[in-house]
Length: 398
Image (cartoon, rainbow, N blue to C red; front, side):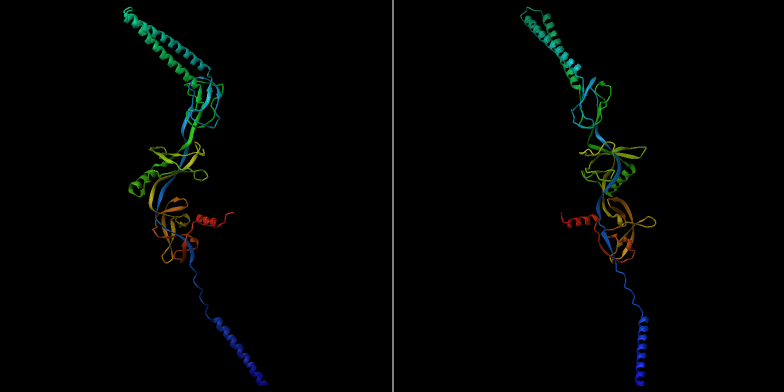
């Protein structure tokens, strides 16, 4: 029995030693190295040359296309104001009425004078006819005939003068109604009923402004205009085809005005105090949203840049020195950081003047998680507005 117990103990000790040796061997074995991180997913756009319009944003103000000062053409007392202040009037509408009674009396007097002249003309014509007949029958003298013919000529002249006086009197009576010289928006009344107005005094009764269309007067630095002209001459820019140049307005809330206009002219002289050249555009204003004196920003197309590259603004990075940089995905899907020259902005995109070639894949999303030399998993970038449109298309109509 003792022999069996000793064998059992020996077997237990041997098993314990084997277990300890196995654990020691397991703990002393080297750990497997962790796997390399997967490539970082990024979104990119491919650089493609485009035809981009040169659009400048310039400060300007709205001005009416026509301004008419309503003035009296005859003197008298205002007895009635016909128009509503601030309303729209049409050409020929009656605005004020001047007391017509004196002018009606002038018409009646001129009418009577003309009737008398006509009567005298008739009498002179009859006398001239009798004198000429007497002379032909040799019973009247030549002198009597000549006198009768002269009297007839004088009567004819008197009739002509009476006709002119009557026409003038009727014209003055017509001018007693002060009418709108143009169509447009009329301002406040500058005189009231009972006021005495005088023709030729220069006083205004009201002011009418034509507001459809309106002018947008704006300025551009002369050196900028010269630079654009030189670029057109060198062939760096292409001129816009006739009818393609457009003028758009930005309002105070950064919204774009609904109607595009056209450039009328650019000034032939430079303002010596500011170095600016004045330009003018004509803008439709059917809803009277543009008022004289309103400040606007004018978007003016002044040429076309050929073979230009534009990328989303969020793709442009800046180094510590302020230089612009882009992450470019290489052929082996490894990114490089490239310094570029950024030009003007077009909406949410920046124009790259130097540093890009056609076919470059520019990283737009995921730039915060990559470094130069990092492997990436690139996929085409989808603009947010396209994503929103796709989501809206998937949403069933209610």
